[in-house]
Length: 141
Ligand code: CMP
Image 1: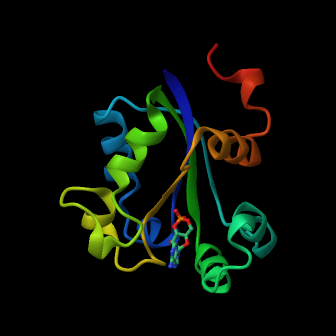
Image 2 (image 1 turned 90 degrees about the vertical axis):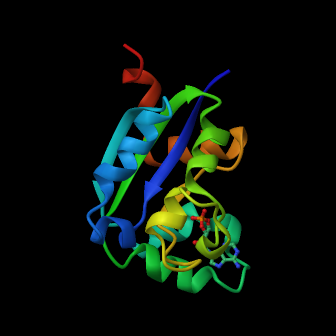
């Protein structure tokens, strides 16, 4: 099915100047960028976005990393987009990520892991709406 998923190019990858290389991977896999926004997240935005992880031991470091520099946020659309984006990203921990994945090629650590991608249809809908609240009023025309 055609799906939408939320993708974030994190501060480490933006600082490395690889936004274009990561976009090429999305495009090469047939994922369309249907909305995009570059921003520097506030602590409140990052904390809200990652609220599901609030009780996890890494929450504080996660918020602090995600607010350490600008991020590039996009909604991707395509056949099986959620799983396809997760395949492109590779494992959360870059040390465990398969060769040729975004995290294997561009990430340094489990915190500075280059990209975020929604993990399921339910979270994708919530995450896309979080950053692109007006989405359905302009996308797809
Ligand atoms: P992301 O897909 O953005 O979702 C939550 C982030 O928390 C994850 O990528 C990692 O960058 C970060 N993180 C740090 N430590 C862990 C951990 N032990 N397990 C999962 N995620 C972690």
